[in-house]
Image 1 (cartoon, rainbow, N blue to C red):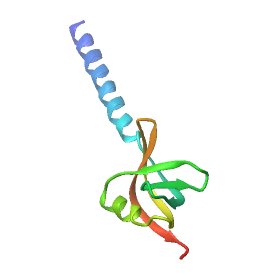
Image 2: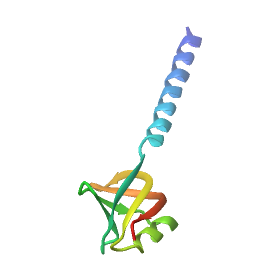
Image 3: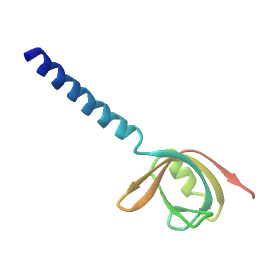
Length: 95
């Protein structure tokens, strides 16, 4: 009987660990957005959604493109009610 309890306890621990790790893995969604960089260092997508740009090397490059239309790929997470994109790649669209 002790072996069964130990086995069940170890199984429960494994399930909790797997749930925790998978939760952090899917917390950010990779997506591509197209929009314009505004003066507040945000990207305003074509659908009107505003994305804050995370402070990373690629993010700094993007926010320097104020007034330009960009296509940005990155991980989007929600923080304090705002959508934040961590830029992994980008390209300037048009001139």
